[in-house]
Image (cartoon, rainbow, N blue to C red; front, side):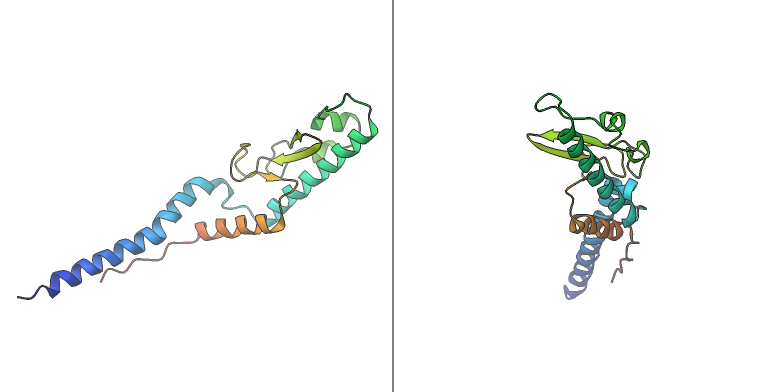
Length: 153
């Protein structure tokens, strides 16, 4: 009896395992990590970046018009009180407030993103590029698609 039969079976098992690892593991990891954003369309992501940019412009205008202490970083509430920002523009598309951070002389505005937690991979900033948002959107779409069926030979 030749050993070709067991070798073919072992080869088929290796191919099936490779298919499961190549498609199943990334989908599982992505669905666990990115689930809150899986149903979010590109318009919400772009809206969040535009909102960050609007808050940043308001913050820079506020700093130029007020004589606050040197190095003071305004809050979103400061901008609303000074009538530099409309109250309805203080929340991102997911209902979380925009956050302002000052890094030296630079003012940065952050949206916590779809998961609502600041400091995670889905956060968006005023300097997020269209390409960043596009790549994130394509990755979420790729993760959310159905897995191909593995064929065991």
